[in-house]
Structures are given as C-alpha cells and as structure tokens.
Length: 372
Ligand code: TRP
Image (cartoon, rainbow, N blue to C red; front, side, top):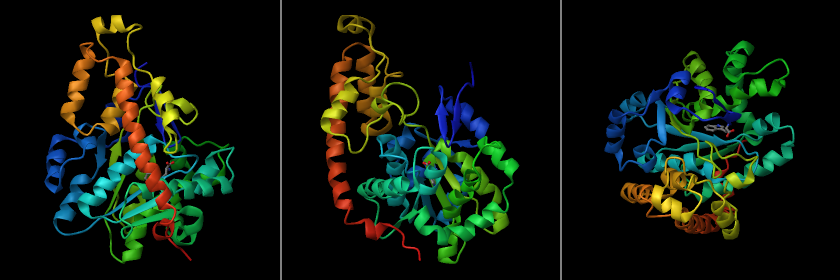
C-alpha cells in the first residue's frame, strides 16, 4: 500500500518513500541550487552528490548568515542503546565533513536518559556505560578535539536542565502526542524527553553569550524532535536550528534501515574480519539463483544491499560506482565478487577504526564535556 511506512525517532518500518516523507514532515529537498552553493565552500561530499543527504530546513538562511561572517555551531547526537554500527557512523561522517568545511564547533549529545526511558530492558547504568563506549566511535572519526564537546545527558543535566525546562513549559501534552504518537500509557519521562533533546540546540547561545545559529545534521527520523525545537525557539529568544537530513542507512539483509534486532543486518564497529565476511556473505543482493542465469539476466544494483553499502558510504568515486552498476546489470560482475570487494573494504576500514577507537580511550577526557 502506498504510504505504508513509519518513520519516527523510535520506529522505522516499511518501504520508505523519501519524497513523501519530505511532504509529511514539511521539509525541503536538497536541490541543485543548494548543492551548487555548498560546492562553493569546498568539494561536495559524496553523500550530498548522491542524494543520501537529501532534505533540509533553513539552509539558505544559515549560509546567508555564514557569508556575512556569523559563525554557526553543529549539533548532533546518539541514543546509546547498544554498540555502534555503520548506520550510526554515516551521519557522523557527514558531520565531520561539515566541521572541516566550515570550521564549526560540534556539540554531540549522548542521550543515556532517552534510551533508559524508552527501552524496557535497559538500566541507567547500561545506557551510561554505552554512552562512554559509543563516545569512542565518535572520537575515532577524527573530530577536532578543540572544537568538539560530547554531552552525556545524565552528567550534564545541570547545564541542560534550565533550557529543557524553558522548552518543556511551551510544549503541551497534546503536541507531544500528535508529534510522537504518545498515549496515556507512555511513561512521563518519555513525554518530557524531547525538551532534553532540544536543549543542546540552544546551549551554544548560552555559553557564548550571543545568538548562535545551529546546524543539525541527522537522520530524517529525528526531525520530529526538531520540529518541536524550532516551534519554541523564537519565543525563547533563540534562532530556529537549521537541519540537513540523511536517508536511513540500509540493512544488509534488505529493507531500509539497519535493525539492531536482526544482528546480521548490521555491522558493528567492533566486529571482527571473520564476522564481517560472514555477514556480507549472507547479504541480500537480489541476484539470480545461479551464476549462469545471472550472466544472462544481469543483477539489480537498485535492490542490492551490497551495492547500497558502496553507494551510501564506501565508494568515494562516482565513476567507479557507475561502472560497477553497469557491469552488474550486464552480468559481467557477479555477487560473489562484489561481496568480496565490499568485505575487503569494510575489513580495511574497521581495522583503522578499531585502532583509532583504542587510541580514543586516552582522549575521552578531552572530548567529554565537564559540567559541575
Ligand atoms: N535521539 C537520538 C537517537 O536516538 C539521539 C540524539 C540526541 C540526536 N540529539 C540528537 C540525533 C541530535 C541527531 C541529532 O539516536
């Protein structure tokens, strides 16, 4: 059925129609004019060129201010419910490009409170420990230690709380119900939580003592929170944050989002080479039943999870990507070979990432925001 998909901060199911999501959420497409403009600040990131970063709010406004010399800050985050997987890294890698391109400070929120409130099976100790663990993955991506602060909610609540309260006072229960689908059985912490996710969008203004424009790069599933943030911003004396939305990173077993409940559909940053090769080996490609058959009919890169991995994250060259798609359609390259190519790449990437992740352990103190 058309439109039969769900995208909320806590649930992503069905075949996502991304254009329809722009309509539903009331965002704007990242169009050619914006791409041309962004290309003026530095080489366009492949995620922009390929429409992986595809939707936005108020980017023209943000860049107008930037061109006048008004510096913005970046804000993104992670709900630490488990180990980090490649789907989580995708918007963070894009965020790193934004930091490098615009020299912008980054505030990175770890919502240990959120994951405690929304997950039956997780204790606050669990989610706090995961926040610390996931911070290693953020640091491993190479963010500038002088410009990056990781905010762990339960540690920094003294700093966040006054802002959260100001937001909370302006958001009614009926708005929270309409935006997030809550009902009378929802615990009251969950109802309050969106105001905690709003707070870092205003924090730079408080810390710097000037009205700081904010750009939030995030998965499109997080947009509902920031509709609330934007609705209250001006009445609190702040700018509305601008946004750049990514599509959801595809799962290896087919479908639109990596799912933590299907372990083989996700590759964790801590997976060993052996596990990576097994998972990629079992990935959904949509290929024909036999090699002979596939040489005749060709493959379908549009539906192939292995191709999507290259497209979303791992093949930097557009030319190489087009060639691969071409050879696949003609039956010149078969799934086994593609899987081998992707596995080699993933293993190589993870080797580097895991080394930097180890090194990050001694860097935690520099990155994690201290709040009294
Ligand atoms: N709620 C997000 C999650 O579950 C975490 C988060 C907090 C976030 N602040 C953010 C994500 C800002 C993107 C941007 O993953």
